[in-house]
Amino acid sequence: MNIILIYFSIKYKGDWNAIYKALENKERVTLKEISELEEKMKENKWKAITIIDREYPEQLKQAYKPPFVIWIKGNEYLLNNSFIALTGNQVNEQVMTWIKNYEQEVEKSNRIVSGSFLGVDEKISCENKKGILYILANGVDHPYIHNKLKKNDLMLTEYPPEYHVTKSGMRNRNRLIAAFANYLVLLSSKKDGPINHLITNFLNLGKDIYCFPGNGDEEDGNSELIKQGATLVTKIKDIRV
Figure 1 (tube, helix red, strand yellow):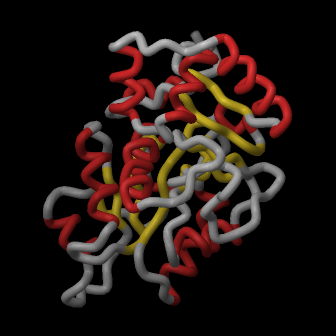
Figure 2 (cartoon, one colour):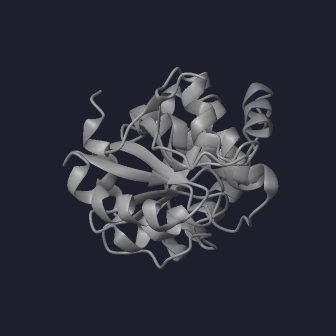
């Protein structure tokens, strides 16, 4: 069954609904197609984990439409950790100070899960030494991350290796980030910015959102989120979950 799921993941480019329909309709796959796929995976050294495999991350099972197949590349042992999502929109002097201090404040068992968004995520990647779990919006053969993959990092995606970035893929990865992370920490945010889609995914799973102080201007999303019930923090080590 594993190889069938992988076959549909490739055929339908990671589209959850299309894969589900193929399974529901008991779409036929020939032995020749399976054999060719197994050879291609071996030749390209692709690593896939299906939802029925023992290694499938428990965190993903709580996601909306948990992926039937995930594709990974890098340090797969990183999956044994727990995760937080640390991100933001704007980079300024104060945000850079928080970024430079975060590694000493994050508990040893926690790692960062990241969508490698513009700005803050890139700066966090530069400072990180423990390893980051990058959730891609495309295949592992065409990674869309701002920095080169380091020894301790891992790339994970629901899209097969030859899949390229799409707008829907960039939105879909937010549900996986929210599933992996125990909570969301926003160093900065903009009102009505694209990060709100990520916030919504955390809220849909009933997970807590923590915000560092905003700058109080008209575009300051953190201050608005705090007014709406997000928890104000000034240090990551103040978060107790």
